[in-house]
Length: 605
Image (cartoon, rainbow, N blue to C red):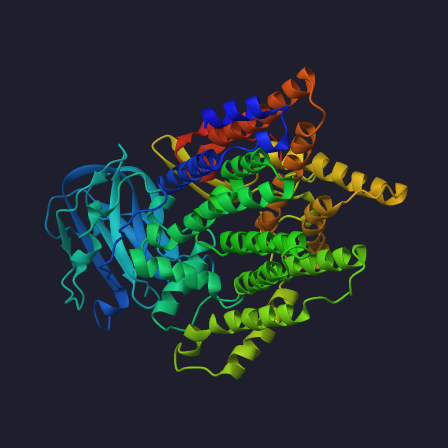
């Protein structure tokens, strides 16, 4: 990394050919960035195991309404809470009692109510996550869980008892109150050490993972999918991770990390091609490596990071097509075909990919008009690409065809209509939804609107673990004037008719606008993660002006200014990444540290 900066400094002011970093150093630099990202993204990504043996009240004992389960702690213990691993999405309801007597069968009056627990899917979504029940410090010898057998039918993977010292209390025995169990109640405490305190997101699903990874598992088991409002390719990729590494947090997240890591060299290649500069490519790749949203979505098992990857590939090949079709027609047609194929992958994750395709078609149209070509060119290649894209989209539904009692292609077609109806008619609200226009600012003057999306929070032993979805301020806020100035340059070029080629500027502006402005016309609730496909173009906008500064006539002053700004932006982006790392990764820190990062009034995490 240091050598790259040295080479960058030495090459400044020389010819463009001399400025380019040798291929070996390019490989070393981008490999270093990618490996760095992988190391940080995999650190505390997720456990490779989770409780697997489950106990279910409705299958434990027949014909009972209340099912008591008594945990013997061996001696009086100072306890304050219990954790319950909720393996499925069904309801879990119990009343928790405690007593301090040593008798094997305490009298009714010896028990005192500690807490009531009711995890109802009608009120909140849960799947493969730990439910926590605090009841304050108390001294008990036994804990009695009285399950409501009429409604509590959720699978419980494990129950942990936590002491006032925030340590795990050993359960020495499980008593069933005389009921003959059809399932061994020891399953509730047979994997006590499969997790380690504190129980962060490393050991469970959080936020929208509970929709996506649940559906991924259902696809593997050919069960009717729970999440049907988006096409299934993203969930199938998550399912591939589960199939490879098991049904655990690491398994359902790892492919997202790999997808995010692969975006770094891809953006390097795109930027290097656009600006004909390896320095510019390294600059853009470095910023993406330390971009907050890119990092957080990589570690979240939803579809957004796959959209970002396929979108970047789509634009990479689109740029290659536009820049090479006059000199290498066969290669250009291949790139156009691949661009549309990756559009098919992208739209098979979420429909918002159509905004990116619209941007590409407009760019091609502008290029044709500028070069006085026919408005429609290479239509055979376009049709071939669309055919493959459609095949990818349909193929993504193959597991759904075999789900449950089976489905036909007409069912899949009807599902598309239901999906459109759902998204056009949804009137749900969410405390962390935000309007489209405030995403680049990460701010809304209304203090009730929280633009950064708070996805996870947990407290333990004086620390707090949070995950918020937001952008790196140095990247997002610097991109705003960068984009505005690019737009001004394009307008000046057009009105003054200087004849200057604005292909690069338009390739930054049009995709950015086409993947942002259409949200103005979408009435459903929106979230800042919808902005993720635009992050590479925000980075390209900043890179554009850094590269412009570098390409100015060489003087000692301009060289120094370039090096200072180049390094200042990179160091600032990296410094903010490390500063905010705890709240974008879930790493436990003190409450005071977390609060110190709330720079704006609408930032909640």
